Image (tube, rainbow, N blue to C red; front, side, top):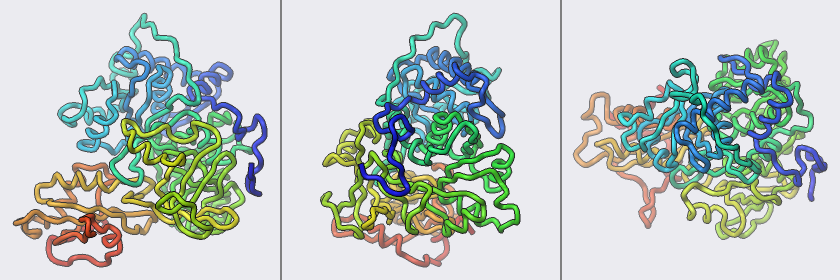
Length: 540
């Protein structure tokens, strides 16, 4: 096995021992509850601490409520909760019934929510009371008729409409193994509509083990988790804390103004951040006490503009990786960072290739698609829910195709170049352009829409929609202009992170000889149409 200076060879019995079978998180938490029931597992900035023993009791209550609602082994249950203990409790309760959690982005509503519900075909929904109305037939008429259980914000604080009825006999817990599906996470991927990614427990556990080196981690660490638990980044942070007996500190959403006060108040030592969050933190004017904090370990992807300056200012060390919902951190940097712009090298147990359009490896230094596979099974997605053709396409020639363009130097360092296809990355969220285009097509004045990502001052992208109006529709004939009206429509129909910042009315869209829209040309356009009603910038 090849190792590099920043990576120690995995020792037998260590976190990174490739021969060790992964312990599913529900099993691990149940064992910790038996061994140390009074130890704190998760502490929420709004709700306070929950011990392992208290967590186990909540899981049992939710298991009863879900079983009473008809959830059985093999079923899927969609969930919608803010980042916090209850989201974790419900996830574990679903798993310990032998069912599968499908956590939904809390911004989903209307058309997008209905589409995902139809695709996931769940047996029930478990949601926070603030979002329960989204699952009512009047709000999502295309959705399935689901039993909807509400959480602690419901009447009497009981999980579900009735909780576990007295005398309810729950079935024996099924055996959970590393190949068992842990969760189904919806992702835009890089092309096509959003897909449900089947994630085995081993994939999630390996992501937790490799994302931030755990060799020096232990029970005295507090992991700050201000990122969504419907994303892998939030889940693997909690998994890593549980593996090391540490405490997870949750906050419902990243806040620049609350970040450092939280870190200091809760003694947080470790955190995972999207690149945009790091940009927000470094945009705050420097202060003399910036480095006076307990935080020491920060994963961030991509790195800040000046990674050395960021680390020195805040007194932290940085690490990064290449990861996506379908894989398990196959490329990692460790703490000893490589050349500027690199996201690391292939970790032990993972193999990578950089290939051309026909899966032929390209020479070092050339750009191609990154392919991944692992030495051990179940470290890569088990496929896309209900999409065998997409699964076969992504795993053709026995390699997982990331859809991302990268290059590798002679020393094995990998550099991310760009995303293939039409995916857009905004504030840590992947957006599929076809999802936005489909929603905009519901506006009565829209004949066609093409959506692209354009550079944002905060890094990653902002969303821009180029819209062709239906014949006879005057862009200036709508109060405030047609572009602004379409932007208002998008705010009603789409999750906030998908709403275009820019809407521009165009006479036509550039096309190839096969009539495909030339999105590269749209992304490269500068300036905009100054005619009345034809342009809207929500950032103004």
